[in-house]
Image (cartoon, rainbow, N blue to C red; front, side, top):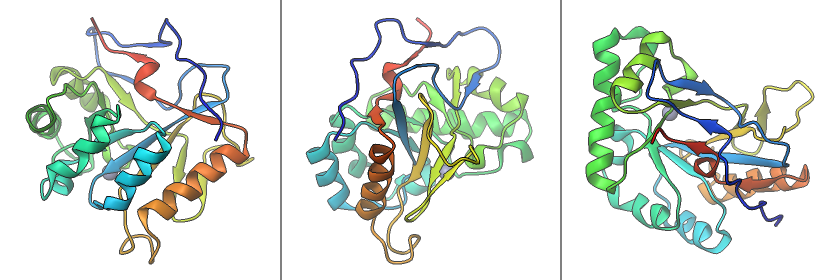
Length: 219
Ligand SMILES: [Zn+2]
């Protein structure tokens, strides 16, 4: 496995408390690195924890309360490996369909549960389906989150979907995956999906870096 370069002393994405949350789907860098993000939290496969322990591949977890509440504890060993927990709403609505107050409830609600359960302060938000508007950016900022992380690639069961029609990764791309199991993956397991994703990343000569090493929350 290709090791990621040391993280930069000066983080290229700097979040600010001023104005609506900043939206990005890649990190400006020349290094051949990508960032793995894993969403929702429905599947809680113990084999994936083992895999994460063995491989030490960094990823960020965007947890949605409805999916994780049956077992908050599952994500703690993953967090203990250094993987950050970030915000993904209470119950996965299309944010644009809600008014400003409804959006705030979704983000601030998930935020306070995640803070309590994981003793961390998430500083990134991911809107379900990548759908957002200005009210989403303002709601995130009001909940103390100043960055909204989207993606350029999305991992399916065996295949990766690319924004680039040439089907290529680019330096600094954010890759989306999900905590999904055989029920959602037509019989495949979370570890099979993850292994297939790593294979695609490494085949293109990329290493996996930690998103939070490249994004600076406001001081
Ligand atoms: Zn989601």
